[in-house]
Image 1 (cartoon, helix red, strand yellow):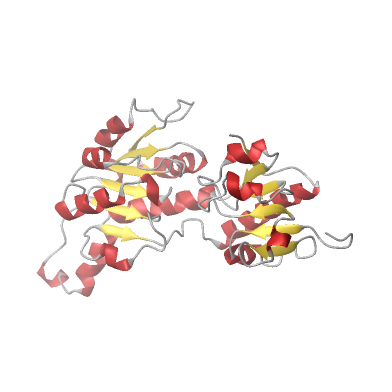
Image 2 (spheres, helix red, strand yellow):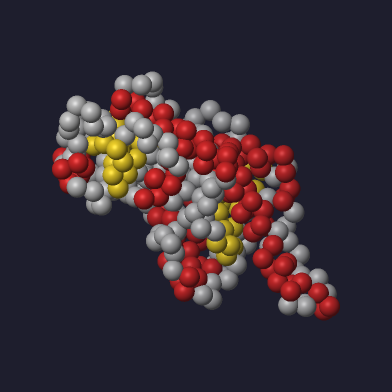
Length: 309
């Protein structure tokens, strides 16, 4: 690298450039992974990439100058943090800066499922109202909300649900002080709750399996705003079709974008396109957090939230 050249920032995809919206153009030369000269990629001192893009030891070996990996969000499940730290690379995410926005979406999905809003709208549009009212539903105040994972997002989900008057409990692998009781196991939480809201880390693949889905049962609801792989999606679809699960509301999927045909004929499901955190305000905060984390590679300031293996 010549003396007047700017340091290289490696972007995991072109979407990262759209997130930055021109920020740091004067501080870094930006290269999208796989689209720039490989010799310039090898000079990267910082990387901006989402947590479900794989960054493993082999990739890190080809980035000998790398100092920082910044994730513009909370999840970092496919980044090998141990391998990064072994090479002296710091891994940082946005911490809790958009947790409230994601929690808002989780609660909106839960309420839409409890209130059966898609079916209620169809009742009007399909002119069924002339024949009477739709089937009665549970009051939100009668719900038992089970939260899986009580991190920043899960805690804010509970905070937002509390005023509705329902009961709240949670489960996570590690006990911690909380406003609500922790059930002894995930299965116990699933059996107890009427609505299960999944807010765990994305590396908990397959955690919500057939047994958990069966425990939630034919009158229960599952909401997922974590990662699609946390739920056995095939088992979920089968349970919805067979009536062994009452309802699902999903913002994340095993494959993204999820194929629309996969959901043909699947009843009682609400689908949104991994958009829980996509508010104007959240994206501005995520951009600012990413910028600060990337500046750490230039020795300017401290990280928003550094991850330890």
